[in-house]
Image (cartoon, rainbow, N blue to C red):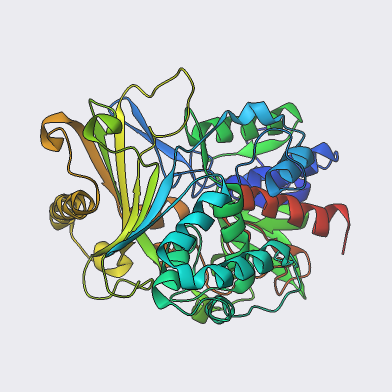
Length: 474
């Protein structure tokens, strides 16, 4: 491929080499389309990538791959994407979780990849709510949540039609929100249904080598099909003529043209690339939720400390609060504790133990720190989140400090730098555009702001938008 792209024309340009962008690229390359993926950074994966530090590779964003189903299960999102991308099931190397739980003050609900466990846990802890819970599950199971034309409705209101106990309501929302809600305190019922099904009806799994297995698989498939991918190649501006995108200027000043553009950069971020939009375009749809995550590396397996859960969704308040972290750099009152070791890897085992803790964080406060204070605050909040986790986990059988061999922490500043998402909003804009359409008739959205959630959802988003807007036409 020539070093310079200047003056080249493509049938489709895809902005972003995340899960959605790569899946869209594969789908179009399978159809013989002349397609290019442009990525500003030097690594693929977007929100679900990895980085290296002192010889170790750390996943970013992947606690688990949701939507797990056993091989041969038909009619599920995972089966659909594998069929659409012509990827064999075994290539994902999916290893199911051991078991997870939702932990609130005085109450826990265990769940795994068999929905019957969660159902029995609700019956045990909330016997007066079990009929309503079953009615909610039946409704969620049959809801047409992938209807691209559906009008958003309140998930809180929908759940309250069946669940009258606010504690159970909050315990159901906690994992669903932490795994995909860009909206504070509530979410669209369709998105709730997608996440409820992907977490509780289907389940969690992880490739033994983490997210890079999926990234490598998508990259290799796209390359084998002759797809073009240009790294360290960001977009400076999308030029417009009337109601169409007419050309793209790259960060290096080169200009290319395309019949159609699929952007996974985000709704607001994409709008602001367009020459006909003001700098403050769609300011009312900027996500407010960002996160921080600590990673602890241990010289023992988590089970040696007495920790055998895969993921714990926790809350320490009287009522679960899922909103912008206002008063401090981090809100440690709720979050996610994850042990990547605690999956069924068969006769394999990760060489080192890992403990990951995620909580909401304030983007503006983190970005306002000078470098010295930034490092000091990272150290402080790393310690605070360890304390929170140790207050929720069973008493460790070993000394954590003695067996810690490495640690790291990423913040909203990191998220903003490597994803370009305004406010470091991992889940993007609160108002999703399900059909992917923008104000330009040949520019479409895929990924986070189109509205399908999780790694499988992101790939399905890319596939759906490629099918709807390029392969089927308008």
